[in-house]
Length: 323
Image (cartoon, rainbow, N blue to C red; front, top):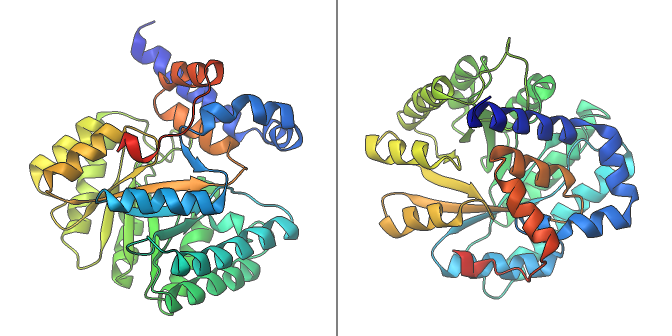
């Protein structure tokens, strides 16, 4: 078995761990497990604290980056969890407006399952509308994340329902899903911002492409279509070869490169310093970071070694210094 096969197996194993509700529940119930994994998580989580997170985003903006932020969490199953997440965003919008050194409000992002879709469509629409209306008052953009394929119809339905009411709304699309080339047409028709990602979830081969040349080719084709439309957009990827090809081809001439905080900071810094496209560092904060940690490690299984080193030798976060 070669290194590529081993890497794919590691990726699938980590994604299965992320999808396992038993392990997620164990993480939430165990202070010991959270304390053990925290040093590895803090490579990717900008902070567990809201105020510290805003200070770090301000520092990144001072270095010339646009920023985005998400309160970490997904697939909330209780009304209490949903209410907590919704209230957190409303508080965050107010705090961003009052922060003394933020040059511009960070873009907000969230999973609809974190604000109510598992409970009801109506609850998710109500909570998402609250966040969007409050964000619009403060001139804050909001972009919905894309989740597992079982939720795609629901997410697009709610997005289309809200897109006519809120000009500050955007949507994420996953290139790996076979349906996305068809979904893109109706999304572009709204004029809302589009964020194109490869897709982080393990999906059946019948409905999605695996990582590889065919997925990269589809990603580039979708990006070319988006660039030809009139909407704002981001190409979100941590793949250095794909970034190089996108910049060389010019198919994202109007877009911005968005990368997750803590993942290949040297890559986005090089693109920012080059000045060809705008760059955005998208961060997450909070304490429910189990899924986010596993997804980041799964993207590049070699990151397992970084995680082990972080756990063995905890060190203070140096967010702005890495960029």
